[in-house]
Amino acid sequence: MEKTANVQYGQPGSMEYILRSQIARSPGGLVKMAPGTAKRILEELNFPGQRIIDTSRVYSHARNIVKGDWIESFAIDFVALPDGRIWLVDGQHRLTGITQQEGPTPITIRLIEVDSEKDARRVYAGYDQKRSVRTNTQIIDALDIAAETGLSRNMATSVFESASIIMNNLEPITGSANTRKNPEFFLQNNRIEIVREWAKEAKIYEDIVKKAKNAIRVKMRTTGMVAVALYTLRHQPAKAVEFWTGVAENDGLRKNDPRATLVYDLLARSLVTGSIRQKVQQPAVAWNAWCEGRNLINLKCVDANAITLWGTPLAAVKRTSK
Image 1 (cartoon, one colour):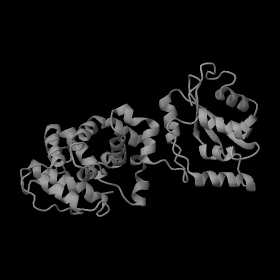
Image 2 (cartoon, rainbow, N blue to C red):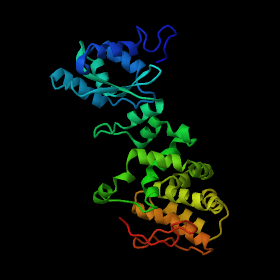
Image 3 (cartoon, rainbow, N blue to C red):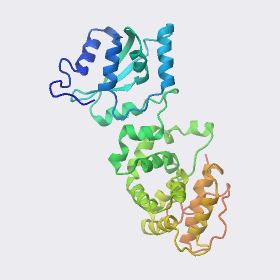
Image 4 (cartoon, rainbow, N blue to C red):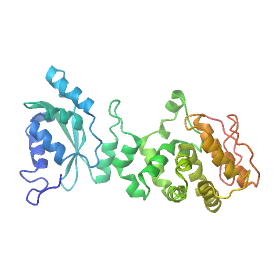
């Protein structure tokens, strides 16, 4: 909600001022939250771009309050920005439940001082609890990565989802045992850094993908395709633009041209069939054949074969999967 001219951040009457006053009067941050105050917080202090309310979760919280199962020690978290603004970053469902009560509800408030909006967004995106997991797109929105990198929301999300493959030299890591051994490839901050580091290539690829018809465009945004495309665009930019433009436009490609074979395979193969490794091999096989001037009649993905890319550091490099 936009502030009126006579109610500034941190001034008496502002919600920021009221919230800080409540905390100052309440050792440990335990306060009695009135329904009206909770409503104002949601209207005035909610995180910009906050997720849509899940009514089933609100009902559960409201019912817990009525039944006496409410746990007031579970903190509702806010971030305080240097300019005086305060944003609610965790607890909107609980506060919504409180708005449905007839009297005050005890609740613990925690105020986290941050140095910038970027830090505030990082705090918000970090609340990935079991029952409150942010989707990848919500993480991208929370950190405002699309605007920062100049990518569309969809492409930024696609690169984020491909990040673990890119970090591991295009070799997907699957299975709970292997993912536990390699947590660095799945940490949110590391994946966000990949979006930033590969934004130049991603922007080029995004512009190419826009030329494709919808059916092929969807396939070109999948994790395996994005990972291979970005890698080729970084190490062989001119050839990669020609290759991926041919795939996207799919216009007049000769029979057995590896790009035409890739298009056919993409359209014939279901999104839900095949392993993630095959989805990386699929464009890699076509790329290698095209760069080597070979015809490609059938596109075969063999699990035992190493994933290699012509003209890149992964050319003919033998690696074992983790």
